[in-house]
Image (cartoon, rainbow, N blue to C red; front, side, top):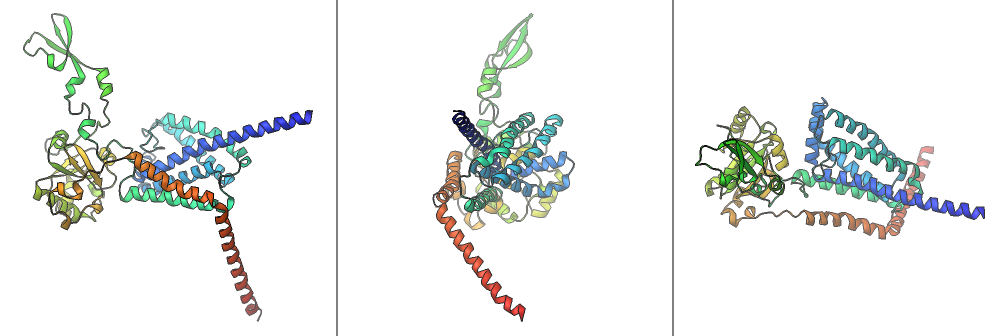
Length: 452
């Protein structure tokens, strides 16, 4: 009777452990997959965060390698997440994840206490956490990670051992392909506020409505205070004295701006001309460069051709940069640039577009497209009004569609491999056996010669 009870207790314990291993794999795997995926989508964003880290840690000499580190970290995290979720290379993967957590947890504690950067960037722009939130997230993750160190071997992996290297190889190719697309085009999933197809005016504070509608104005007369809306201010009665301005909480919440830092300043008088540019009914090309000193000049001919085209057809063309007047003068001397230059915050430019420089087309405040100069049309293709050319078509951003395509690209081959893994394993086994026999044959042919 006792033996039956012990067997039953052991069975229940094993089932509980099995469920806990699966749950731990899901939690740790999903976290690392998500972290690596969003970094691979936008490696330039990861590079910007690395530059920020290098700067505050006093190792700025590593900044030229920021993009490399960004891509490597993205691929590494994605692979660890996939291997954890699928139970591939269980022992090695669990220890690698633990090493990562042992490094990241103290680092995020330092970031939370010292606060040298606003956020750690662990999930890119897709999910911004405070430094303390990131630290507690890492502390929580340590629990399932340590559990996997002890019990991960109790549950077999999804794929046969002989084909697990194929899942790793394909996952690596997938992550690197995402990173390549993000670097040489633009991120296929845009987690930033400035998405193609959006109207910047509508997303700015107050949108196209006068910002005064968001406030009540307090005036005082004979010791009595009264609140007025913008249209009801007693302008003709000079006995009312302005006291204060109160923000309407209910309205400001509804109109909470997703874009608060789109400020373009004229170099001459430092006036914000962003609304003038956005409200212009004509098409507007913006050459965006956070740093003219470090901007790529290899496609300057295409940029100049685009400027000539804009000039010929009456469109606007401006360069918006965070660089100094002296840097602007050097750029003009080197490139022959005749277009106007305006100023914008460096971080805002980097948020709008990935690349230095990049080009954005606006029409009545709406982002028509964003791209790197290397993908601009040639001079011969700029032969008609913009409405009649491919560059005049708005590239509507559809994040759900793009994500669905990426999921299919990754999961379909993985599912096919899962269905055919025995056949694939047999083929791999035969190939290895054939290679082994060739090596033995070659060795047997060489041995007699050595003996002579």
